Image (cartoon, rainbow over all chains, first blue to last red; front, side, top):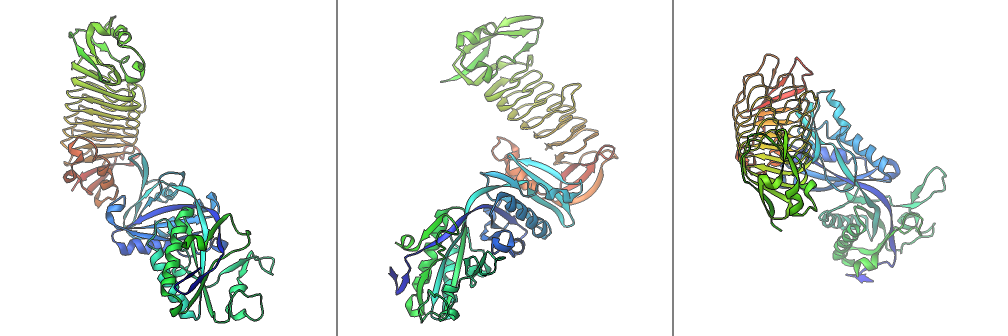
Length: 298
Length: 270
């Protein structure tokens, strides 16, 4: 399949099941909601070393937030429910409780409930106050700028992590420009995040390593500088490969995000140095969810 | 199906225990069976059809026409369904109510909504003493749900209240929120003496400055984020509380009762 001169490989991206949840951070203005959200989702690129994958889903209008203030919704994904709950709580405690004027709410209602502010309340040292409003429990924790308002729990749902595609270009600037265009479009899709810095990964990995301690290592087949010395998957004119990784609340959400992302890359086309779109395919070693590129773009 | 309508035929001198006439107990009963139910009236019992003219068959929607202040225990332990009372209700209206909805167009007597668990109890007129309170000797009053009183309430509203919301459009008598364990009582009108007497936790939300005991300490004016959310949860009610113009998020906070646990609060609109 070729779109605008860009070859879409007959391959698929492999993804794996994760547990996910959404939280809504509000603040006096969007600036402070965003600061808190960025802190909470910081260092959360890959479960391999961060414990979770997290990112900002979108900015919320005051009319969409529980307390009618500007807000930001974030998504957090982890390999298991326990890990997710731990990461959520630690990050909320360090990055939202501490952030001026912030409040924290559940972003998903249906599903298994996991603590959001349920344990953060103890920061109130006994002065915390519980309020049940419309069947939901909230905690009012006295803090130095007033009160930190938080919902007690949020819902954990089944999710999918590791959806991806690779952009193969003739130069590094061209690969990056294409990825930036893709991310801009993909950020408009709900229920997904691209957890890596700016949404783009330059260190795509394969499963396993020659070093037994490592579970993943550089994807040498797609490393342009190794073209001559490894079993490469790159043609001579490809000089740079970048990956976009997508986590979503469902397979369909990732499908949608991949479609608009790949389309944005293809819109730049061969004339801007984009040669191929491929995907992280690990021969079934990574996970049960398969995203076939040509089917997605059909 | 039309509402099961019970219209008063006569007004008895002795009080009547209406507790058998709740939606869950009447489910699947034929009108003739309902007519044969016996109600306690003073020291004797009378048949339902002696007291009421019965019309309609929807037992999940009960309407009592021409009610007066001697019909006690209306909606006792109500579990789902709706009861509408045209006129006044006696004592113990909606006692131990578990879910559903009760509306009284007139006044209600003592202990309305006492030890209520959930649901909505609306009184369009006034309510007597011990609204949403604990029964004598018991330690926990209302544990959930919403009580809306469009008129005024007597003394000891929310005594020993544990959870839930009491909304009073009019005035509240003395000892409002006394011995409160938790929950929220909002009073738009005036409040009497000994407000929040011995309250442990909970919120008294007021539109007018109360006369506070010396055991309540001023914590100053504050903008509280939970208040707009609380007011938003009243939007579905047929009440002044649903009006966005009465809502506020800036309140003066008094902490107390310091003679007790001291984790309660009186929030007064600023």
